[in-house]
Image (cartoon, rainbow, N blue to C red; front, top):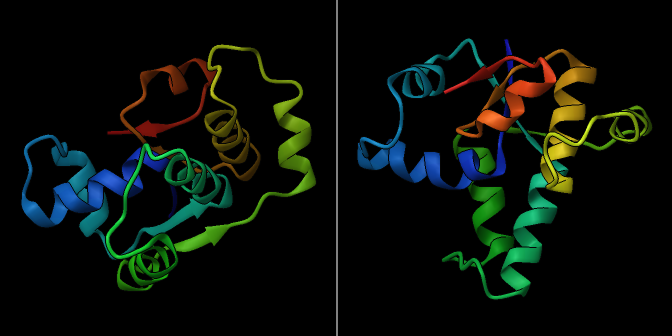
Amino acid sequence: MRLLLDTHTFLHTFLWFVGGDARLSLLARQLIEDVAQQPLLSIASLWKMAIKISLGKLTLNPSFSDFIPRQLQLNGIQLLGIEFRHTALVATLPFHHRDPFDRMLIAQALSESIPILSQDPTFDAYGITRHW
């Protein structure tokens, strides 16, 4: 089963997972450990991270250009590109969520019929499957 990782999930869940942090739910831990899962990370999430780094709101060590490819490879995470059908769906979504990057994740989850691994309960208003 494919599983779309929220931006927050990608950054923090990995650190919580390897560190055994209690903030990571049991279900999230099981989904991450399940080899049958195909984790996906949206290009929108990478874009959001890059903006946060440029604004000084996020620091990665090593750098973004080293950290991201390494984590994708180590964790078997595939990138999900942004397609026209995703952007067209964003145009029709109600504004339960105001964050444009999260709105793209919602559109991708709906369009691709895949669940999202996220702590954000606002995603639920869109009728997608959210695990946490």
